[in-house]
Image (cartoon, rainbow, N blue to C red; front, side, top):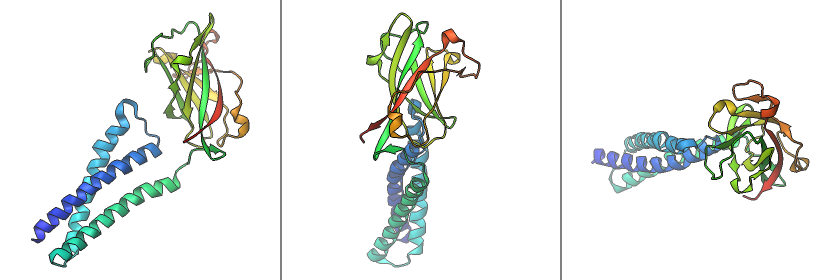
Length: 242
C-alpha cells in the first residue's frame, strides 16, 4: 500500500508541477523578454519548463510520501498536502524572486510606455503593397541586446518620390542606458541599418514630443552607410493603458 500511495502522490504532484511550470515558465520568459520568433518562447515552456515541472513534482511527491510515516487515509492526505504545499511554494519562489530582482518597465504617471516611431527610407528601397512579416523589420536594441520586435503600421505607410515613411511602435520594457533600432527593408541582411536613440533610462514628459530626424550611422555588419542609402528615424515616448 505504501508503494501505491507513493506512486499516486508522486504522479498527482507531477501533474500539478507540470501545470505550474507552464504558468511560471511563461511568466519568466516574458519577464526575461525572451523572443517568441518562430515560437521560440512557446517551445521553451513546453519542452523545457513542463518536463522540469514533472520531474520536480515526482521527486517532491516521492520524498513527501516516504517522509510522512503515518498510515491510512489521514497519512495519505497529510503526505499529499505537504507535497502540494512544497511544489506550490517552490513555484512561488521561482516566480517571485526574479520579479523582485527584475528591472521593471519605465512609466510616466503610472502608465507603461511605448516608443512610437516613423522610419524614413530612400525611394530606392522597395516597399511591397501587401503587408508581410519579412519585408520590413524593426527591432529595438537595449544595452546592445535585441529586446523587442516592433509593430509596423502598414496602413500608415506613405510614399513620395524621394522617401517612404513607415510608422510603428514597440514597448519599452527596461531602464536601459542605451537604446537603438535595427531597421531592415528587404531580405538582404547587409541592408539592415542601426539608428541610435537618445532616450534616458527613465523617460520624462519631455520625451513625449517628437524628436528630430536621426540618420543611420552603420549597417548590421558595422560598415558605414553611404549618404544616399541612409535611413532616418524620428520617435517619441507615448503612454499606453494596460
